[in-house]
Amino acid sequence: MVQTPEEARAFIAERSLIHKKATHNCWGYKTGFEKTLEIFSSDDGEPSGTAGKPIIGSIERQKITNVVIVVTRYFGGKKLGIRGLIDAYSTASDSCLTKSGFYLHQLMKKMKISCGYAEWNRVEYELGKNNIHYDKADIEFNSNVELLVDISQEKLGLFSQILERYMDNGLSISYNIEGEPFFSPVNINH
Image (cartoon, rainbow, N blue to C red; front, side):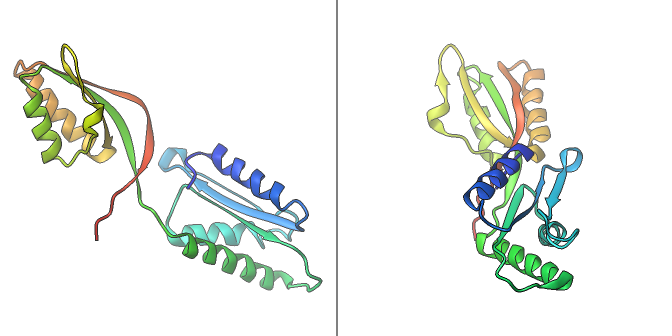
């Protein structure tokens, strides 16, 4: 998994360096979502559209993002032709995705919560009720109780409203959102 175009390009450069004697190191990547979506590919000297497009096609068929694929080809003397190249790169990238497995990631934000000791039980209750996990080792008991939690984008609005309702009722609770959004693995229980 890659989270940024820079990470994807670094992976491509690394693979290309490892296989610098290869005839072709063709690649495709897709990162981001919505407004930050970035999709690029390269045929790396193969006929136009015979390598990069099939790699991107594999990614698109799986409906995934934050992925990079590099397919390395050492020419063995047999010409595959246009259709053969398309099939070979498509099959290689499909196989790569299948063997790598898929991991679900969610867009998250960091929320810093501060509350008085009298309010801590309410905050802890709401965290549990809303299935927002945190590491107990990250709780700081100073003049207030302070905690940094990772919260999914989809729960952020609702949980913020809960905390604001408590604040409107005069409880000693505050929060702020810190940093940029990031992707985090989702724990899937079967």
